[in-house]
Image 1 (cartoon, rainbow, N blue to C red):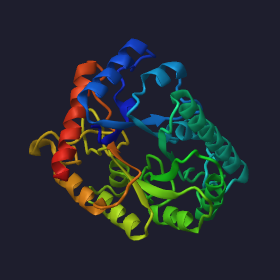
Image 2 (cartoon, helix red, strand yellow):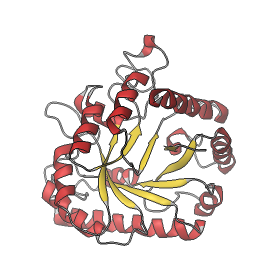
Image 3 (spheres, one colour):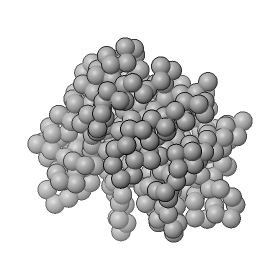
Image 4 (spheres, helix red, strand yellow):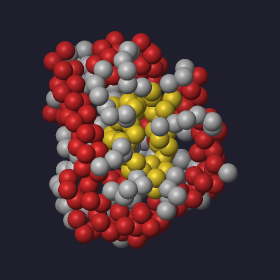
Length: 316
């Protein structure tokens, strides 16, 4: 039985354009492997960037869905730096709420197309990063969360995925609100829809340049009573494929020899799983970008299988 939510889009073989036969091969491999309990699906404004009908046909009946708004958020920020649910610019905040409304409609489209309750969580983010005309503010984020929590998400919970916060003297990958400010906004928000915070291992490590911080973030969120998701995605230092503290969804280290470059190890995952032990998380899983791009579908599935085995061992 599947046990992990997998951000399979990061492992897609469609590296130079949409190829439905290749993507179907990936989904078939994931279904046969047996470790997938759900998919983290990217949302950029539509439930699929190329063929929504293909997606609805390809999602297995036993798979749940976590919808992440980070791809669309980053796309919009690239041309609209005031955009974000935490934006001090009211116009930028309203544009982010419009995008969130599209995600809400996407939940409805997915569930009506699949004919079942499928979406367990929707991940939202505390953009923007600080620019000359706007900055992320906890109170602006709280006001946005108030609105989101008043909408009908068809039973899905909201999860604020913590991304790396701005750190002075350090080039950010995302540069959004700090975890403490996100937690304060969550706790101050009101509405019928449940909400919490999710930790992405790699993004917390990238923020602090410290592989021990993801576990600390998990314990901080748990102590405040808001933790509802955990995604394992690695971070690297000077890695030839995954770079230097870059948000590229690096894999687990393969051996003690490469653990100085690839920082996500089974031991570190074990500490994080201990930190969430006994919590009824909305989702637990991983997201790995499979590199190099020349990997076959079978090799991509094998890398995801290796990740699932490592998490199984860490949980044992």
